Length: 158
Image (cartoon, rainbow, N blue to C red):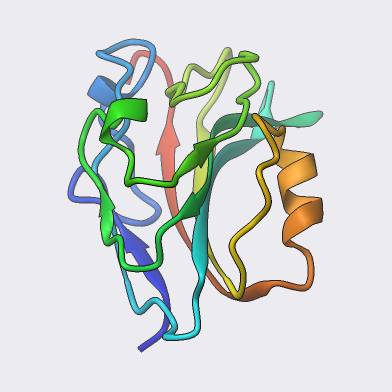
């Protein structure tokens, strides 16, 4: 079975409900995963938006959530997950609001895509403090066993 990530809040390629955005409660959606390879030593979750600031002329990828060293036996995160809901040993990185934790979709214009990327790694990563996505991705290189993604979309006022 291949690594897979899902949410009961939205299907792949479909709209993310407003509750999980800046127009709602701005809480993390529930996420579940399955098919973690047996040799996995840790998991990484990165949520980002490659359509910022405008999908018709994207200039950057906005990072919404960075988690690393999730235990391989974990099977997901509950709705509204914060640092106190994370499995033991999980570390948090910085999002583009320069803080840890989830920051929901809040696109300034147009319908954006939000990639929830799960990586199975063959190692436990060193303590990187609160890394940015780029530092985490560089450290992960050569250690990715499998990856999966769940994409949701959002446009303000819809």
